[in-house]
Image (cartoon, rainbow, N blue to C red; front, side, top):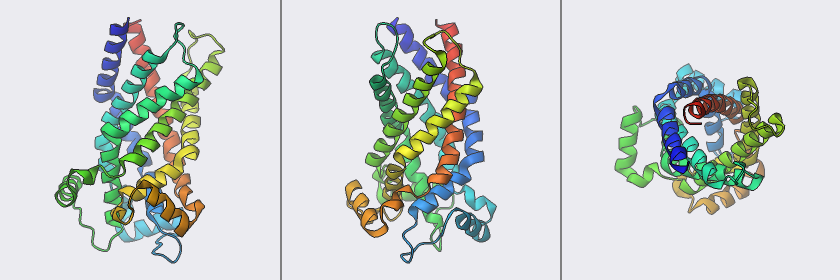
Amino acid sequence: MRDRAIMRNCICIYAHTYSPCGITGGIEICITYPTEYVKTQLQLDGKAGAGREYTGIIDCITKTIKTRGFFGLYRGLSVLLYGSIPKSAVRFGAFETAKDQLVDADGKLNPQRRLLAGLCAGVCEAILAVTPMETIKVKFINDQRSANPRFKGFFHGVRLIIKEQGFKGVYQGVVPTILKQGSNQAIRFFVMETLKDWYRGGDTTKSVPKVVVGAFGAVAGAASVFGNTPIDVVKTRMQGLEAAKYKNTMDCVIQVWKKEGPTAFYKGTIPRLGRVCLDVAITFMIYDSFMELFNKVWP
């Protein structure tokens, strides 16, 4: 039974890597990326009177389009496109593996173990996929804020970062990224599994309609946004081109608190909310579809 579960998880990873899931994730990113771009710009912004460029979401969008054109809102998109497929593979593969290890004799997870399984998935994706992807994305967006952007494209930018900063240049902010992704997936999988159990009413064989799964995914995404945006802000600052001014993660937290106040830890919440809710809703709908298929092949 355990070997069968392991094989199913391997197939799950393969399917997330080479199936329409990756294509759908790419389409979703293309649609929602401007919200990610605006979120990152607002999080990189200082306080008023201290080099602050934008007064809010609309001002950020307007100035970006005015100075760099509409496609300026897509700066750094290629990084997320390249990283979306392996990120999904690691996330769901790790969750299913952890879930198989943590279920009780009846095949159920209690609330604490749901959180733990989600946490394991988040930590794995943070280390293996998200940290380099997010670091490069933030540096690309940060580069565009300068008067003379240096990165001419994805591969040119990555080569330049590694040449000047070494391999660690694409692994900055690994601690806040682990905290962010760990808390992200702990919250999302916990909320999703809890809502699905509630919908089934104790009947584990009852199927949850994909539309309902999407709605539950949006709720799970919103919960993760409100629960860990402060960590996301710190991660963004630690991965930016000005990260050198922070000694470490805690120093970043202290400096932001002292110089910009507690509200700075919720910068970019609204644009992040829009993208994450749609992202999580679509991802869980696709994930459920694949798992239904796998369960039919390997009951």
